[in-house]
Image 1: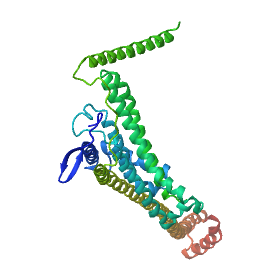
Image 2: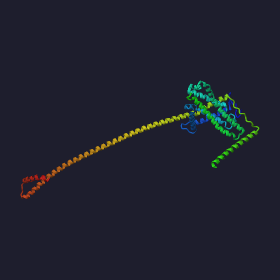
Image 3: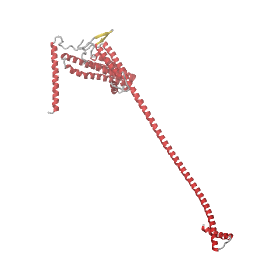
Image 4: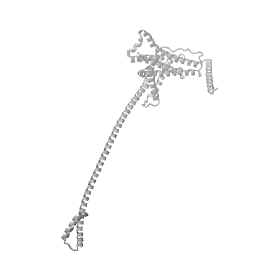
Amino acid sequence: MIFGMWDGAFFKLGPIPVDHLIVTQWVIIALIGIIAYAATRNMQLVPKGLQNVFEMAIVWTYEFFTQLMDEEHVAKKWAPLLTSFFFFILLSNYSGLIPGAAHVEGFQPPTSNWNVTMSLALVTFFAVHIAGISENKLHYLGHFVSPSWAMLPLNIIEEVAHPLSLTFRLFGNIFGEEMVIAFLLFLAPFLVPSLIMGLSLLLGAIQAIVFTILSASYIGNAAGKGH
Amino acid sequence: MSVKTGKRISFKRSIVIFLTIIMLFGFVSFCMAAGDSTLPVSAPGGETPAFPNLYVIGWSLVNFLVLVALVYKFGYGPISNILEQRSTAIESSLKHAEEVKSEVEKMRIEAQANLAESRKEAQEIVAKASKAAENAKNEIIAATKEEVANMKTKAEVEIKAATEVAKAELKENTVILSMLAAEKVLGRTITEADHRQMVQQFVNEAGDLLC
C-alpha cells in the first residue's frame, strides 16, 4: 500500500487479480445503472417525475453535444458514450471525498489511478478513429497527411498526444487532490481538510466536464466534414 | 458608518475568527499526532501507482464498456424511443386535427350551400304560394263579378217584367176610370164599343206620356 492508496490486488477472480479500485468502479457502475433503470422502467408518453428530469437531461445532452460536434446525428450517436464519461468520472472523483475512501478495503477512487484514466483515454482514442472512418470512410485517413505528407509525423504525434493529455490531466488533478487531502488529514484531521474537500467538489466536476468536452471535440473533429 | 458597511465588516471578522479556529484545531491535532508514538510522525511518501497495470486497464475498459451499454440500454435507448413515440403521436394528432379541421370546413361549406338552397326553395315556395293566392283572388273576384252581373241582369229582367205588368194594369185601370168619367160628363150611356174605342185612343195617345 502506498500513501492512501492500495496498489495491488484486493482479491482474485479465478486467475485474474481484482484491484480495490475495480470494486469501486463496479459500485459506481451499479449506482448509475440502478438510477437509469429506476428512471426509465415505466416510461409514459406523458412524462412524470424522474422520467421528466431524465428526458430533459438527455435532450439537453443532445443539444449540448450537437453544439460541440456540429452534426446532430454524430452527437446523437456518441452522446451515450460521452455522458457515460461524464458521470463515471464525476462519481469516481467524488468517491474520493466520501469518508472511508482509501481506508475501507475495496473503496478507492478510480480516477486517482492512471491505469484507469489511460483506459478512458484509450476509449476516446478508438472512438475518435471509429467516428472518423464511419463518417468519412477512407477520406478520414487523408487528414494524417494534411496539409502535406511532411506533416505526417506531427499529425501522428498529435493523435497520440490527445489520449496522453487526457490521461495525465485527469490523473494528475485527482491524484494530486487526493494527496493534498490525505496530507492534510495527516497534519490536521479536524475541519482543515474540509476546505480542500469543498474545492475538490468543484475540481472533480470541472475535470469530468473537461474530459467529456475534449472527447466530444476530438470525436466531432474526426467526424466533421473537414476530413 | 452605514449599517451595510458595518455588517460587511462584522461578516469579514467572523470569517477570520472561523478560519483562525480551524487552523488552531489543525495545529492542535497535528501536535497531538506528533506526541502519539503509535502514529507516523513523518508524512508518508507520495508514490504514484504502478503503471502500466494491464489488469487494471483491462478491467477498467470492460467496466466502462459495460457502463456505456447500461447507459444506452436504460438511459438513451428508452428515452429516445419515447421521444420518437411522442413525436409520432404529436405528428399524428396534428395530422388528425388538420383532417378534422378540413372536414369541418367542408361540412360548413356544405351546410352553407344547403342553407342557401333551402332559402331559395323557401323563396320559391313563398312565390308560388303568393301566385296561387293571387290567382285564387282573381278567380274569386271574377266569379263574384259574374255572379253580380247575372244577378243584375236577372233583376233588370224582373224589373222590366214587373214594369210591363204594372203598365198593363195601369192602362186597364185608366180605361175603366175614363169610361166612368165620360159617362158622368155625357150623362148618357155610351156603348161599350164607343167607349172602348175612345178611351183606347186616348190612352194610346196619353199613356206613353204617363208612363
